[in-house]
Image (cartoon, rainbow, N blue to C red):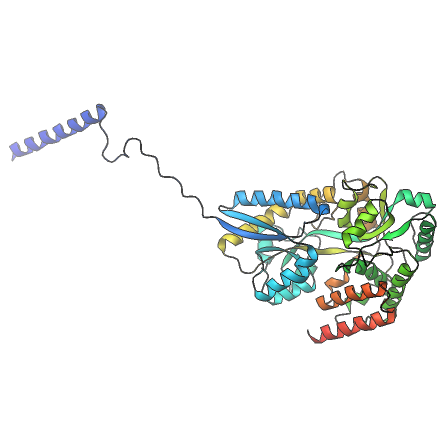
Length: 448
């Protein structure tokens, strides 16, 4: 027994010595990778593509598009495998054609430009929109926006405005000085300004509202009937307690018709598209342009010949309950499909975090003159036309009122576009226009 133990001990010692010798002399560990073998490569994440529908297709939107492209790059770098496909579409085509068809079929893009109000209400009730309420809480953005009411349905948030807006008159300060006029405060003063500009040979108001751009005319008429009838008049159209045949609305239609008949509005308004009207102003062919603050980018852009001679004023008072208000709100931004897989949901959260922040809002304010949709601690050294617009907004003592199309049904909005084109084209009277509008409103209210 003792002998056997001695032999085993000796064999173990020999085995250990041999192993040590092999290692010491450069022998290979049988469990080690073969000489020259490459370590296993980390598997690349599987690529997935997401369509991102935007409306930054005009030259005047180039700064906003550049911001979006920067956000896309950042988001792609943070989400493994993500590849965005940018789909730029004209805003009217997107809102009235493509998105409507996609929503009806149940296949909207994962991320898309969205209007608040009736659009958001309809799409949310159809189950097409992603509920952003818990996402905003998760990202700490719940209380960062100025106003989300136009994207809120039954207490849930379904869209995010990327900027706000105010509407008013941009004007050529040099032409005003040449005509010997100042910014009008009242409607009577406004008439005198237009007459003085005409006497100098200037087109008073540039406007392109034809070819499907009737919404441009609607901006003016919206402010007219709110000035004359108060903000509540448009709030009650869909409720049935206000009517388009009410006296303030009919009077607004008459004032618009008079502006055209008296030669204050460009005689080619129905023949020109929206960009044509804008260009006529910023190339010095007209003295005024009624437009939204989003127009600042074009007015101060490379093609503008008046960038050093332009300012902004609110629509003049008309002696009605809507005086000292300004048309403005937060009605356009981004919505997201309710049909997202896990990876797409991660991408959406990253996009929201990267796009909706104070730095980007300030960048848009300075570069494009877009009114911030988020609360800013400071607007920095904002100067020039942008500062003029912001000051005018603040000076509106009764605050801002939303565009009428966020308060009525889409069919009513479309009817007003075509009806106002007919009014300015001399095909319908103000009274008949009001009757046509009320008929459309009654039908829309019954269909609810």
